[in-house]
Length: 258
Ligand SMILES: Nc1ncnc2c1ncn2[C@@H]1O[C@H](COP(=O)(O)OP(=O)(O)OP(=O)(O)O)[C@@H](O)[C@H]1O
Ligand SMILES: [Mg+2]
Image (tube, rainbow, N blue to C red; front, side, top):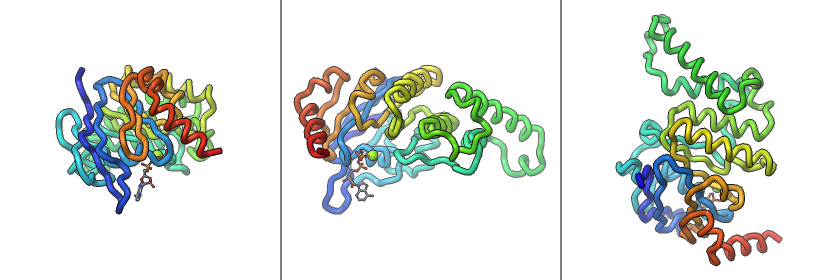
């Protein structure tokens, strides 16, 4: 198995709280892995560590064998790790198309002079970027909404748009933080199928955070379970679903809500 991302003894402390405590796991190249756990388990913190938003307190993060825990967020993005956020981040006042086009521009190769003078290379690139935005929107089922203002999209489609923007950055590893939050079961299933399709088409590796275990059982090949910052289980969906500790952590969390 070829590994795209490896966390080794990853630790993050906020004051006295170990939000992530000695967590180790691997994400297989070309695979879809899940990161699950109850509220406050440390899932989003792990994404913030991988993307360089937070500095690690201990341990290492390797992307394609290269240590990245000391790199800046823009360097990590440049290496090919992109993400979506638990709270959707879009240019709310821009159209669906422009939201994707601005992301496509982040990977454009022309310089400012060429853009200002509208030199041939600029025009060629510009056309290619428009085509890229178009085709991404088509693949993601947003083609008939290109002119809609992002803010006016139904919630589920805003989440899709955010994933489309992440894809526009040509990731090798896509990190999705609760992409199905706020969706009904049908929308969730559609989205999970789309994620699987996108993974194959773009030859990506995907790490997806989910709060509800049942939602990602069907799509993930491998699942890592966290609870209070620590690893609770790691294995195939069947293995983790039948793990007594996992069952207890989830039942415990459900009971606490009542
Ligand atoms: N910047 C921060 N400063 C202090 N504490 C933080 C910070 N970020 C996260 N935490 C704490 O770390 C713990 C893990 O939070 P995190 O957001 O990673 O959990 P999560 O698993 O993503 O939960 P949820 O399912 O609710 O999104 C929580 O106790 C949280 O309060
Ligand atoms: Mg979170």
